[in-house]
Length: 207
Ligand SMILES: [Zn+2]
Image 1 (cartoon, protein in one colour):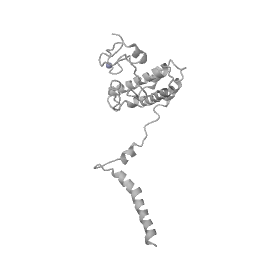
Image 2: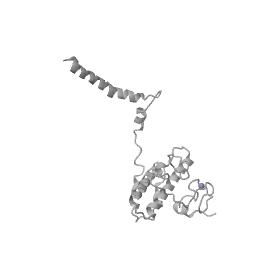
Image 3: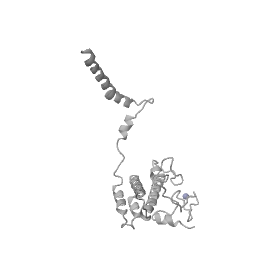
Image 4: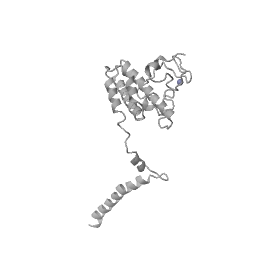
């Protein structure tokens, strides 16, 4: 059995296995367990069905993103999720560091995706040194410093803490958002009615 040289070069420090199902039964071209093809373009289009942004959407390529376990408490599912993020990132790096691309807009989109993945990877407990390991041979490349910046800033932009207010705001009982109605009544409807009455009083009654 021959291990896939492409995977080997990309994931030097991981076990040589299918990036999709982790099976070790792989030939040069495909995984014998799940049929995943190794030698195809795996980058896709910016924001396409292989992009990180569509990972959880119905548009996601099911052969690319195999049941990512982000919310899962299961350790194996979470590490699988991290592996998929890492794999996607390595594909983007292949493009950013390997291709001579004249389309600067396209490049920018993939750079943005890399930034978002690096942030997510770090927040979810991935080792950012692994990311730098992927590009350690390319310090002279124009994109290198940008990636280093993403890595050192990753995880700082925590999700905003508005969620509790949002939850209260949209809290519902019997399908009625009481808090929202109460707040709007107090601050919008009541003042409007009071001022209308006062205005009416002023214009009609007192003259
Ligand atoms: Zn497989």
